[in-house]
Structures are given as C-alpha cells and as structure tokens.
Amino acid sequence: MEQNQETTQMTGNDIIPKGNPEITGEENKTMMQYFEWYLPSDHSLWRKVKNEAVALRESGITAVWLPPAYKGACGVNDVGYAVYDTYDLGEFYQKGTVPTKYGTKDEYLVAIRSLQEENIEVLADIVLGHRMGADEKERIFAYGSASEDRNRQTCDKKKVTVWTKFTFPGRNGKYSDFKWDWTNFHGTDYDAHSEENGILRFIGKDWDTDVDSENGNYDYLMGVDLDMSDPEVLEELDRWGEWYLNFTGVDGFRIDAVKHIEFHFFKVWLTKLREKSGKKLFAVGEYWNAELARLQNYIEKSARTLALFDVPLHFRMFEASRSNGMFDMRYIFKDTLVDAEPELAVTFVDNHDTQYGQALESWVLEWFKPLAYALILLREKGYPCVFYGDYYGVPSSNIPPVGDLQTLLVLRKERAYGVQHDYFDHPDIVGWTREGEEGHPASGLAVIMTDGKGGTKEMYMGVQFAGMEFVDALKRREEKIVIDDEGYATFTVADGSISVWVNSGVKAPEIPKHVIEEEIVEEDEKEEQE
Image (cartoon, rainbow, N blue to C red; front, side, top):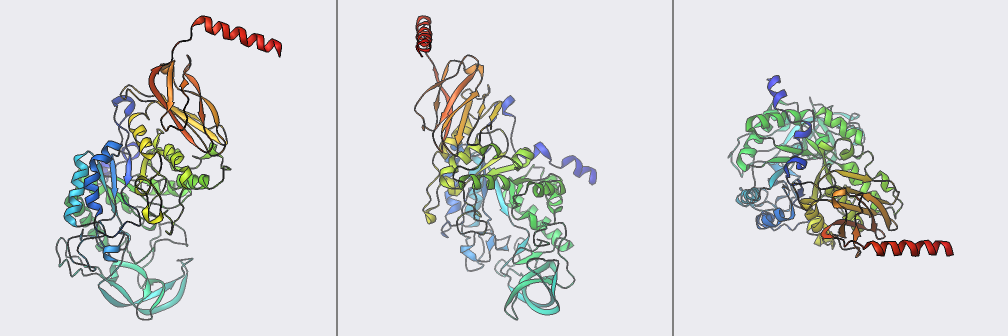
C-alpha cells in the first residue's frame, strides 16, 4: 500500500495544473473565485455561473472555484462555512429551506457541467474541520480551555449540555445513514445548560497536536470540532469524499482552514481520492498566515500534496496599497510563497475573507488593484486566482469592478508567455518583460509600474522585436515606443500607475541616413556652443 501511494501521489510540478507553454503553446491557467461574501440570498448564483460560462472562457478563465454547495446552519443566508449537512446540496428541506443561498442541487450540477463544457475546471469549496446547527443536544462532561492558550485548562471536569447530535431528519438517510454525536468531536464553545460561551474540551478527548500553534493550539476554530483521530470520523470523511466526487463530477477542491486540521490528514485523504478516481484532483488549501515559514512547514508535513494560497503576497500588496508611495517595490515578492515555492503557490489579490467587515479584513485599495493583478497575472510563476468582487464589483459596498482587469486577463491569455526578465531595481518603479514564444504569435509584453512618481526604465524586450512599435495596452500612455536593434527600449509609466507595452504589429519607419547624419551634426554644433 505504501509503495502504491508513493507512485501515485501528486507532488511538485504535478500540483499546479499547467502545461509547458514554451513548448506546446498551451494557454496560461487562471482560476476565478466565483463568489463574494455579500451576495444576495436569492438562490441565483448557480444559474449565473451557467449563463456566464462562455464569457468566462473567452476572458481566459480556465478554472472556477465555486462556494460551498451544501446546506449550512444559517439556511438560505449561509455563505457556506457554518457546515450542517454535506450531503444536502440544496435538495432537502432543512434549516428552513430547500435551496442553499446559491440555488438547488440540480442547478449546481448544471452549473458544473456548463463550465466543464467550456473546458473550465471546477473546484469545490469544502470545509471538513467543524460542524454547526446540530439537531439535538447531549449532556456530557467537559473541561474548559483558555481561548488565548488552548493547552491551558481553565476548570475541572464539569457537566455541560452541548449541541452535538446531527441526525439530518430532513434527508432521512438518503445518500448516507451516518449520524454524528459528541464522540465524533473534540469540543465546542457553548454550554446550552448554563447559556455560557467558552471553549470546552470533551472528556476523553485531546486537541490534535500537529496544527497551527497560534493560541497555543489552533485545532478548535468554531462550532463543534471534528476529532480527526476518531476512526468513525475518518471513515465517514473518506466515504463522503468519494460520494461527492462521483455525484458532482468536480475536478478538484479548495479546502478551507487547513491550519486547524491535523497536518497529515489531507495527504492521506487526497491520496485515497486520487487513487480511487484516477484523477489528478488539483487541491489548494487556505492556511491563513503571512509567515512563509509556516506555509512551508505545512507543505512539508502534508508531503506537498496540495497547493496553498499565497497569503504573504496578499499582505505585501495590502501594505503597498496603503503606504502612500513609501513601500519599497523591490521587495514586493520578498518572503512570498510564489518566490519560494512557485509550483505550490496560488496567488490572489483579495477574497471573501479580506472584504470590508470580515474577520480577516485586509482589502487592497482600488488604485493599486491593477498593479496587483499585473503582478499575479502577467508573470511566469504561480497560479493566479481572480476574485469575483474584483471582476464584477461589490454593490453592497459601492465598489465597482477593477479597472483594466478584463484587459489584464486577455493579456495573460494571449501575450504573457516566454522568457522573463526582471527589473526590480528601484524603490518605486519596477518592471519586467516577457519575450513571447512561437506557440502564441502575438505574445510578448513589457510591464512597468510605480507606487510613487512616474518615470522610465530601460528593459530588454528581445532582438526579435527590433524596429517594432510598442503601445500601452492599458491606454494610460499615448506615445509609441520603438525597440532598438539590440532588443532594448526605454519604457514609460505615469505617477502611481502601470503600463503594459505590447507589440502593435507595426514596424517603425526607417529614418533616412541623411536625416540621421544631419541630426548628429546639429547635436555636435549644439554641444560646441554650450
């Protein structure tokens, strides 16, 4: 068994789903998170996905991460993270509704097929660490744990009443007859008898140890915490994973809150699913921490079986957007996952948790958004993820779609290929070029950006472009720039802005020899007079 796992396990280059565009001409891969926190609870998202599938593909989206599709404890208003019944995808009357916030089971399945028909992979958002909204209470013994140090016991054994029994009466055993009770959980944060809040560890249970060390031990997050050492729990999660994959036909997973779950769990769980399905099953985990070392530790503990979101890079961009031009742009990628582990880095600018009003609020300011998206979309490393709220806007917060995002997506799809040359050599003005490749005839570009004053930067574009005129695809600069005979040009950018220079397809007219000689003579005479 160990030998079989060794040969089928996805690691390194297998994780990020991309071809080799240098050789094959395959299109760049781009993920999209298809929801934001404040969507209306009108059951319409799955229908919107279906209707938008063609447009998404034309924009260059190759994978869509859909929100949690199963019934949450808050019913129709649940974003999907207060997990109640993972077998109810909007099919049964539970928690006051049949459809979820996003629609019905049938609409979900249609949305998946619509995307896949456009060659767009579908990633399901799954939450396996906790449950909420139990159907019945149980009376048990528990110990108190300090919220700031979960390893410190705050009270002796006491009898408590906890919401831990999940019987799913509305589903009545369809798909699974498994019922959850207190023995399947480590603890919770509410005693219904005393009506007091506080973290409780159930008698005979211990927090998992190989988890994030924040708060001493960050196994417990919310609701009732699954005991990942309980054989019943592990068997049920294996059964559910196989059922979900077969029932929905998704291509992979976005996995929530992995730092709160035993670090080796997904190594085992994903390996089993990949073996049984025969699919690569791309997976990316959310480990919310800005310290690169913690992400790298998780990558090693999970045997490189899943990618992670590049939280450190998000915070670099967040800081840059709010530093009034004082951020040193030379170090925008310093200690980021995409720099240290590019094959396992999913880069992003913002997401549902960083929105205004959320617990992890860290919204990148609008002026910097085009720069931030260029940093993840137009470079050779990482697997970029575009946020729904940036693509469509966030009406509830009066935030419009990010300007130039559609153009940047097309530039990634058509032009961001070839050898990359970096020019991160100035505290404000930085840039890079991509030489293009034969598989994409129109490819090649030069990016220059600044968080302060505008200016110029000489960069190598490639001798293959000698004599060609380049124009700003973002239309922020009106001039035309000509690549010299050695493949170089001096590119320009306005204050606090970005320009992406691309080949216009027009060769600059050659200047007659006598005109050049006259200009040289005039210049010499001017220097003599001075």
